[in-house]
Image (tube, rainbow, N blue to C red; front, side, top):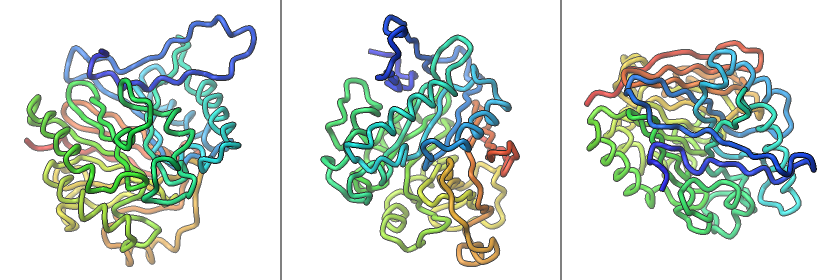
Length: 341
């Protein structure tokens, strides 16, 4: 079995190869356990990715200008990976994704950066939530994140990934297939096992539909269910960052604890959960004026109508988050302290 700190499988097999490449041996870089807990882990994260968009490649390029491609441990896409809507005839969108990924992310040693994904509603044939697993076509065979998993189980769509010796990322399903409540035991068990290793483990989560949306209804069914089931758990275990998607805007919330906004707590503090998002990896929308949105949603600290990806650097003492737009401008930049034990 592979070592537990490897982000696994995270292996993309290029299904379309040119004739002269058929005998090529492809190698894939994985996250090897560091020899020291002070070792940085770097990753790029975005959601709601636009297939064929030049902005997507610009976002990658500018992120690599902050951290060398060879030092990026993995790239994460928070759902709506190719907008294929599970149509059998749209499989070519996956080919386009893999070709773009090969072209943009292959490093100087000709290794691909590992890819981590979670399920979005546009991976479903009904483009909805609460669907049967039979409606998740294509995606479940391309992206399995458990060793030996063939994508045929509902549990395929939530998974844990150890980032070095100091942090844990959970990929969750925001009720595209699995109800929020059905994942509670998995979340708690993952966090408890990590704490038994190191009481000050840092925790991160990534999922598609937000608990604290920047655009869609705050009292929408998925947002309400998410807050009812996960908000208290995230607060109990002092989750550092929750990466949300689906709303196609840039947002950062104020620190939130058990549903209460901590207005007088800095986002740099380790207190409360900061929710960032909201899935604008080349797919966007025009927000209302900033002041209108903030008035309607007092949990928001920042919001912009900006395509962006996040570049996250974490180590044993703190984590640094940068939000970068297609022009290379920093939309946001802050540092969070490591969680208190």
